[in-house]
Length: 122
Image 1 (cartoon, rainbow, N blue to C red):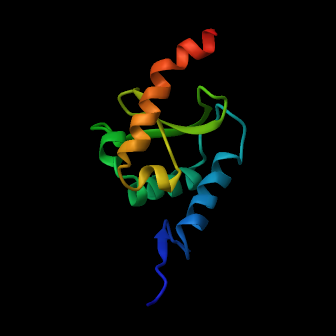
Image 2 (image 1 turned 90 degrees about the vertical axis):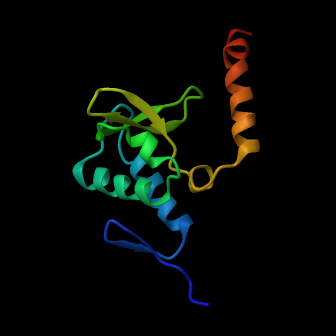
């Protein structure tokens, strides 16, 4: 059986891991609170469209205006999308998290989020 190639924005990747590495490279390419340049923005839009199971919901009705590098609640770099209606949300690039629903992982994440403020205050 032939190995599957992943063609994202005119770049061919031989594995999901290599495609994810390119997204990680873009995330760490510049400092926090900066917008992606045009090429990186176009690549990440194609990447999210290809891999993200909730892409239509994340994109929203108005569409994506910008993608921003930010830090999450745990001080880790992450991507945020800003829509044309000026609403914002975080978006994961990690394929194992975005490719298909993992209900146990979502449940654990919800539980961590529920106690996040209590842990921070402690």
